[in-house]
Image (cartoon, rainbow, N blue to C red; front, side):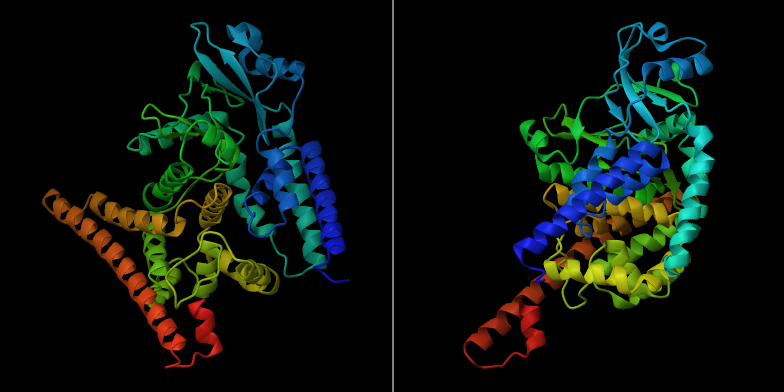
Length: 468
């Protein structure tokens, strides 16, 4: 059958929809880890058919809904009281529900509105069993498809995932995040109320806002999609390239948008349970690598990839950006063309063994950094790619590299001004180099097209494709 025929397209769409519906049903029935896996798939909107992305999004904030008796039982165990007595008001109907917990709106006795995150009461008992079940499933898949060896990923991340079950740890993470990003006035991290918090209950300031991929609601608030995307990318680039304390689960349900005091977009960061720390040496290598990719510095790409333990540097760079890299052209489109999408799908299918080797060679924290980068990429696409994510992150990488150097306690105070000036100079050089190269390439393209138009030169097919 012709794959471009309406009958084939309609049949495949129906097949994808049935599969997506089954995945959501299985994730909701099993909860916990399975919902988190489904949430992760939503970030691959450049590879998976639209039916999967559209259907799996329900797992971001409307996954499960447990009965009020279960909530009462958990509060009795943790606080020796029920929520309707502990709070002035407590709404048993959750406003959101996801992989580990559901969120209820409540009021403290002084009238302060709060969000109460209540862990599913059986989650801790089931966690080890869920991990073991997924390990067995991965073993079965590997037996059928030997190259599909993902069990090591689950083994390495098991401890990190277990940290999410401790809501006191999540509260500490949120306070650290707020402190490290306080210079971004557009970032809001809800305040934690520790007297109403335990390892399974987290009470924090209630913040209104819409999901960051809700384009219609962002526009209804009179906010700019470009400003929203710019702030999102700069926020997480700051964590990746400078602070090293990285939110590893920034899916749209965990990033809300609201109108700030300056009438511009304000971002509310939620769910701080899953964090990863990237060492100073790895951050410096990543900063330099991202800059090298944007400037198409082949030697730099190879050198800084090796600093991160990777030999197949070109494949690694394409995995990092989640797009093909053309070394002859500086521009990087944020939305993949049909040909580029086909290239990435072919890479995932036919170079899977090489991808596995790259992932295994990386420092383990980089696995969740990949998750962060890909999730932010998918949100930028959902917003219509209003900003150049690659360029913004490269600028953040240059600044982050300089700030890391300036923060080095071994540097004498008298030299810190020099380091600041050096950072500013490096940032200026980067922008000038990038813009100069892009201008020269644009002039070269225009000149060749003019010469070809007047018949003064003949372009071969490869050059013609480049000019397109």
